[in-house]
Image (cartoon, rainbow, N blue to C red; front, side):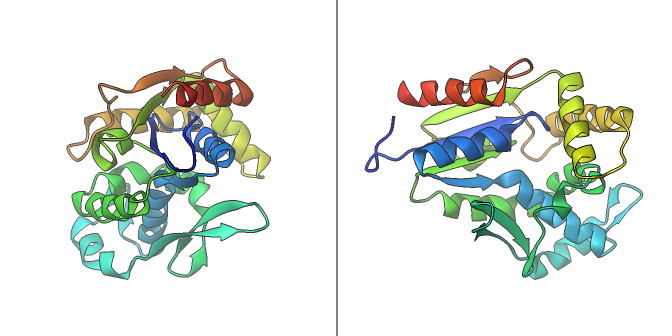
Length: 230
């Protein structure tokens, strides 16, 4: 395991709804590292767009969004009740709202806007400057921290991911369709892998973790074993 002096950067990339944030958060807790959910940052910007009518019929109004970026303040703040870092947007805790299906359905086109990525990547790199960080997302090991000491690429079967997401949302009281969620996951995969700006792909030196049939405990043990051997 990395000690307190030789802290490292752990980059966890992968497909949507495969549990990257859950694993990354637990790894950070075990190591007493800072956990940063980069996807939450893009979701927060997407929520801003939805609230301010910058998305119409799934199409992002890019000129208007670019002109509004200076108004968007995204940051994390520790929540003493959950012992997690929650995402805040312009002075408001939006940790729960960014998980709604409407945000999931629109986050990929927002994340594909070059100026949005440039803004958030700069923030993410600043957060990781002192190391001792676990960050998950789509381009952490390829763009944000290409020199990260440990890179993991997580994936899972689309049906498994859809069932996990369905269970998560229904547990929160949302009325959602499994078929709609599955279609959204497949479309997000396609969009993320083919976008021009920082497309999703596995870094050449990343280790693949397919967690389709693994429990959370098994995933955590798998990652910690790789860190121990780093």
